[in-house]
Image (cartoon, rainbow, N blue to C red; front, top):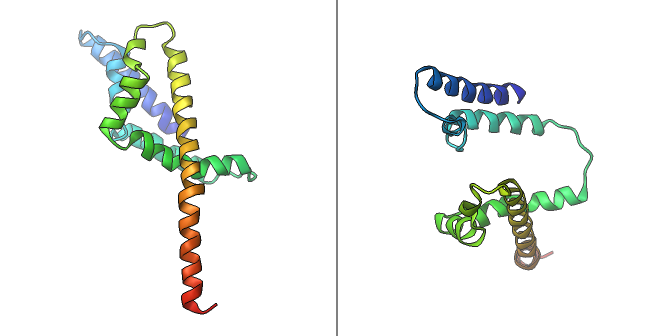
Length: 149
């Protein structure tokens, strides 16, 4: 994991200095483009490396971590499923663009991400409890009736 992260950081810095050497007016954020999206090769390598690192990590079971982990895929589906949802949430509700030049941008970014994550976890945990479990219970009872148990 460290190797892919270091490679990604090094590629950003090398591109930045290459552009500066060639006299191209650029900023570090322009070169960040190459690792900033999930369909870029360096972002993919970092993601796969991180997955492989955590896959074999030995940890004790923690009830709260497991509870939140069950809702994590739901968080992705709720807040990142469509362009309309992203525009509404990040543009209209949280007004992220208005904090671009603010000295509080880091605080807004941290709090808005945490708030979105927590709200989406609560929504998905409610869905699991009030929608998924009753449906599975109904299917299980029909299955046991059809099997004659």
